Image (cartoon, rainbow, N blue to C red; front, side, top):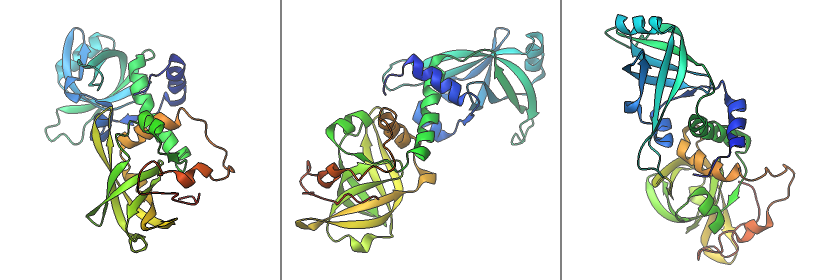
Length: 298
């Protein structure tokens, strides 16, 4: 994970202050969020709760509807503290902190069969800790860039691999469940270009998935998509360059974060830029591709 400056944190706070992030299983995995370490604190007592969503301005939680809790909130003039906890890859102990908030509303939680749970709306009384802005800001920034810079291709070089935490450019693509070895040539939020052995024209239009080995955190990311085009590799009849379009509705959040680590540090290229001439030899560092590609867009 790259280091976030105080300027960047302030920028994220100003840009995304009121945007809610719903805490799904995927979001919890991508951020290291620890739901079992979360609770509501009021008048010296702790109450278990579930964070449904959070912005930099407030949160929606699911909590007990017991009268004792409601009485304590009333006694505290609706002021409570919400505890967040995250397990970060680079740290041994969890990162935990409190955010002071004011309870602004209640609503029955309709999915509770017993009726003893409710939604509670919280409004933060001040700007939350920088740690929360850093973690959630990365998510929001990655989502924004995945739409705004979706077609921006990243040529896979040793420097790029280091910056996006890609372990190896050697990968595996599954075409209708059948695995085939491949080499990554470039990546973007919307797709990828790879080099494979064999005739590729029969693969165009077929569903596929590709696996990427990443670190920080160590994980294997599987991305679903479709093969949309193939190109011959000059001088290599046994190889082909294949273009993939990812299923963006199912694009893993962790992949967005890795790609955003790179694009957020680079200036967006003008839309009328000519094709990158370096792309013609993009995969020449790996044995299968000798001069692959001709600068066409995916």
